[in-house]
Image 1: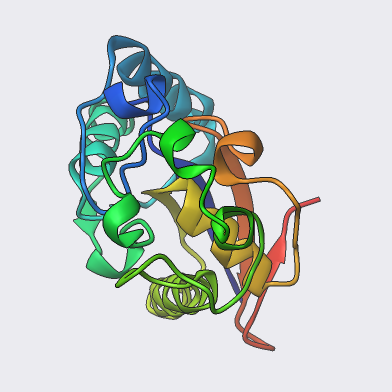
Image 2: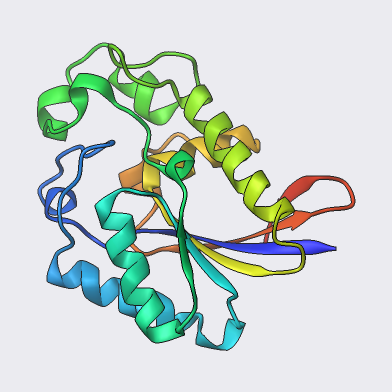
Length: 193
């Protein structure tokens, strides 16, 4: 048995557009972000999705609501899918933080280093893994659209062993889609080829 999770990043926000870190803060979807969310749903119309799950942050919820209008299926929100907590970096412009000596390690690598009072990539990856595993094990043989966040997605994939040297902005476009299978027989995630 398996559960299929379609992992997606929310549509573009006002802060995405100006390269400002959101983390667990929020900003509204742009018009382009709304259109990206519509396109995301339209790309999944033939997949017979059973449920949409989003983080509890407004940008993900708004993207999920747009998808719901098109796919006409229920939505659930899961707090554990929220974006990585970037501490005092949240609300800051990327250009203003790049000079921090830990910038590259925190946002390009998978380590225990974090911004002051923030969350490490390892902690975030584990949190997302547990949330997705709980979703998969409680929805046998279902197809779920999961709308959450770029940095959380980067950390989760790194936990699966898919490390990269890029940051979330470079790796994941807004409203990108990544199919993932959870195999119940051996309790493992497998990226679609």
